[in-house]
Image 1 (cartoon, one colour):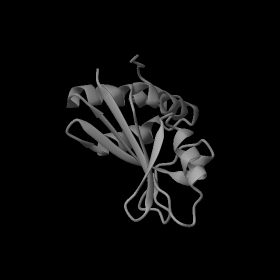
Image 2: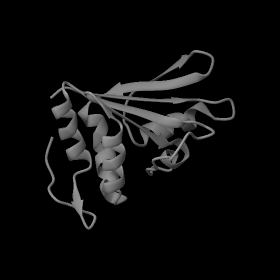
Image 3: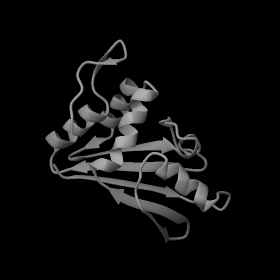
Length: 140
């Protein structure tokens, strides 16, 4: 199964690049590069291995239902997009912001070869639950 994970975050003038870098890599162990189109942006790309920390954190923080809803809402074709709060990620935690944040967010896109493969990835990351407990866990 071919999986591509893309992460990015703008680095605003009031922010320290290394802190934004840490916020991203706390959740996605990818090599980050800096590009600048007016506002500097850190970006990186990974694969399934880049999602293993997210997989674990979703269970530790017991937010599978919320995550599943966010992931499924962000599906377009064979990709799912969502955002994470930078400040919370810097602390190694997860938070899906309700709207645009003043300092921006970490943008994540997970894509797969086809929509069925993407839905399998979502089932792996955030399976359906009953009373907050996964109905069934799958391995990838």
